[in-house]
Length: 289
Picture 1 (cartoon, one colour):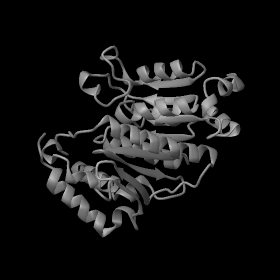
Picture 2: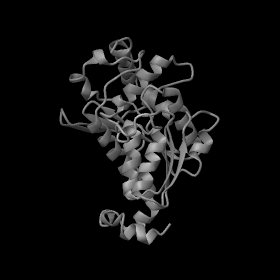
Picture 3: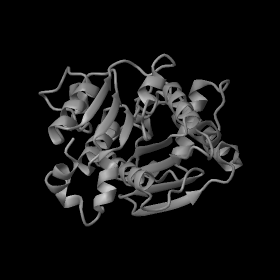
C-alpha cells in the first residue's frame, strides 16, 4: 500500500479536517462491520471514503427490490447479489489498495472470533430484530477489548451508543439476561436505543411489530447513523476527541428538531427504562404491519 499516494490523491480533501498523521492511522485501521444493509452498508462506504483501508464485512443476505429505498448497496443491478460481497467490491472501487475480508455466513460462536480478528473497532449494522447475534458480537468485542458502536435509524433521526472495553456491557446497558424472553429483549433494546422516543409522535405504530419482526426505516436516517458512527470511529482510532461510552447516549430527530445527549444512570436497571420497556411491549409487542 502506497500510503503517501493515497493521501495525496484519493484522500487529499480529508486533509485540513484530518491531519496527515490521523489519515495514516485511518488507512492502517481495520474495522469489523456486521451487516451490510441499510446502516451497515453506509457505515462501510463512509469509513472507506474517510480512508479506512481494511474491513471485515459479514452479511449472509442478498439484495432485494425492497432494499432499494434505504440500502446504499442496493440497485437493480445488485438484486440477488450477496450484500457483503457487493459492499466489498464498492470499497475496492473506492480504494483499490483496500484489504477486505468477506463473511457470507451468519455470525455465530463458530466464526465470531475470526470475524473480529485484528479489528480495531466493531460497528453494528445488524437488523434490529437479530438480538442474539448482536449480543454475541458485543460480548466478544468486550472480551477482546474492542470498542463497539451501534447507531440505529429512528424515524427521521438516529441514536448512538458506544461500548468501551472497560465500561458497561451491552447486556448491562439494555437490561438483558440470557433468561429474558426474546420479545422482552427486543423491547429492552428499543428502550435503551431511544431513551427519548421522539419518533413515536409521528410513526404509524400499526406498521411496527416485535413479534412479526417488522418496522419502517428511511434512507436519511441511515445516513445520520453513518455520520454518528464514523465520527466516533475517528475519535476512537485517532484520539481526536473524547468518547462518551454508555450509559451516555446521543439522539437526533430532524422532523421534531430535537437533539439530546444524555446519561441513563444504572443502564437497564434504571426503573424508568424498565417502565419504557413495558410500554413498548404494550404498544408494539403484538401489532401487525
